[in-house]
Length: 238
Image 1 (cartoon, rainbow, N blue to C red):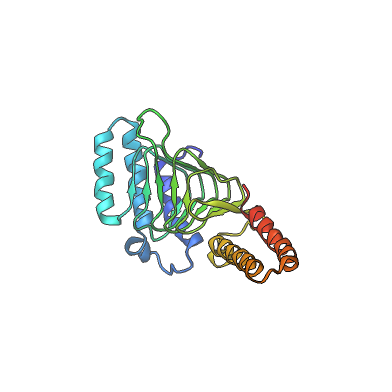
Image 2: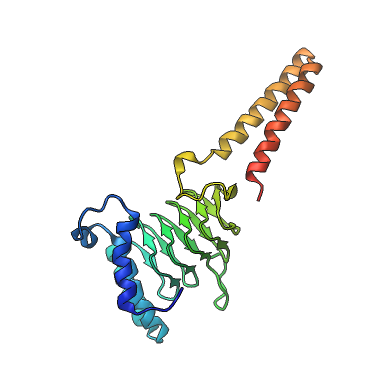
């Protein structure tokens, strides 16, 4: 995150929606429909105040900003350039969080902490180009790698490598650098559904073998299920 004048950074904040949101049609909409942009602009000012030890004033400014935008950003966190908070309602970014350039954050995201210690880094680091899906909770001093993607409503408590996709509760890596496009939730596999299908089929095979004494069929079907389970584990393996 290179240093830049406040004016230049805010100018880039105002230009970012045009690159990330196909719904925008006029500059007037920036003033009426993009609370994420205004929360970031307020943060830019508050962060400068915070760094100059005007911490109470900085917190007050962000408190007022939260009332109008419904986005809670601590002025002490570090946010890079061309970050876009889409819609933004319910976003929470903690004090020691670090967000690098060109990160995309959707509504309801929490970059939270799991420690009460004051003198340690408690919040996550989001590397350049990452995408955090709506409602995702990224908790603790972990790292979301460059161009990584976190699925909607996932709970991430472990670091996610660069160029990977993570989904679920707790989140697991399901895609290792295979798709560098922006996060497409309609293409994310339902890992819970896959696991339930596997368990259901295995239970059915065992019941059939016990009730009908089909031991040979059990061995054959068990090999099929083992392959299914192996593929499932490889998909989720970190």
